[in-house]
Amino acid sequence: MKKMISRRNFLKVAGASAAALGLAACGGSSSSTAASTAASTAGSTAASAAPAAAGKVYYLNFKPEQDQAWQDLAASYTKQTGVPVTVVTAASGQYETTLMSEMEKSEAPTLFQVNGPVGLANWKDYCLDLSGSDVYGQLTSDSFALKDGDAVTSIAYVIETYGIIYNKELLTAAGYTQDDIKGFDDLKKVADDIQARKAELGVDGAFTSAGMDGSSDWRFKTHLANLPIYYEYKADGIGSTDAIKGTYLDNYKKIWDLYITDSTCDPKLLASKTGNDAVAEFVGKKAVFYQNGTWAYSDVKDLGDDNLGMLPIYIGAEGEENQGLCTGSENFWCVNNTSSDEDIQATLDFLNWCVTSDEGTSAMADNMGFVIPFKAAKDSTNPLIAIANDYVAAGKTSVDWCFSTMPSEEWKNGVGSALTAYAAGTGSWDDVVTAFVDGWAKEYKLANG
Image (cartoon, rainbow, N blue to C red; front, side):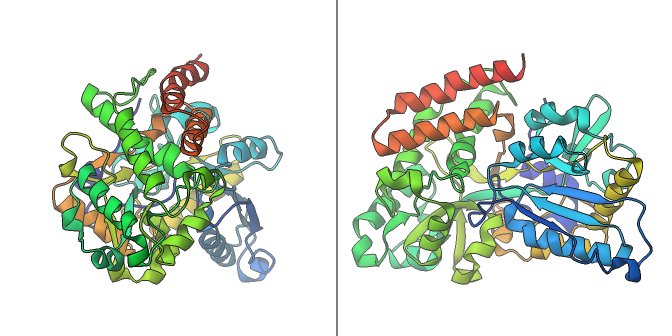
């Protein structure tokens, strides 16, 4: 299985133009709950603006928070070239289900994505070999490609970073700065104090609600769950496993307990709390800490760039004082090899334009907030990305995105359900451990025969 891509390795190979790293959501925007479908709005007038196109593009987009930006970029490309580009955006947490449904249609996506090696295993038979394509040639490093033998099945199009975003103004008002938080014990001490003085400080809790609604649960059953997996892999010197041991699940419990105890709401309410609730609490200055990624900048920017900080997710692991933010990618483009030759070529041309043209690279950097691993990449103006770069410059070790090795979506759902029941008091932590460890072995076996 492919080795995890670390932030430090990315900096070594990406070059100065792509040195600012981090971004994109695993499960989608907190504000998106339904699929969005739109053809390029310029399609109806394109014939008079450009020659008729031989092929067409249908992109099944994974990221609800970038839906409008993709619609706008598609419309502009259609206006310039006459190539019809349709963007369909799957609902948060529903990408795999949507992809399976769309691939059965006569007009299937010409462009889709997988989340890494596990996702690729399900779709590699549909993936065009991109080894000779122009867009593959634009990658800054071969390490950003997934392969099946010698075939390049998919390529990463965005490098992402997440951690604990915090409100500097509120943290300062509580009498602390980031320098006071160097590990889990420090984080707990500060959060406990803020929670105890919440009325005095004018907040509802130290942390935003850890909502386990589908618009938010990915932050904990996937992103937070990455931490115990990362430290176990690191300790065992591996990059994947058919049977997770759960060595660091006590640490997982520590951080989850902190999230649900020093919170804006009663843990029993988390099943119905949404991603929008967490955003509103943070932007409304009712919470100091908010676990999310640099892709969430558009949701929190009203607090002011200078007021935003980001901490690593500390879980009490040995050596975590040298830990940085969590960085990697679960966004790999695949071109559907069952599409017509004309549609395949149109799709390859569209992708190459996105990562080489001034308009495409500007849209991906500024409108989408992406850091892309391509030669013509532009630095993002997102201040959270600058914070992510500061950790790397300070020599902190980035946490790899190991969750692309999670055996299935069903495994994530099992962990999420157990976390929710534990928070509500209707389940035990042993249930979480069972879902994590036994569920992993079961789902890995099902996925791998």
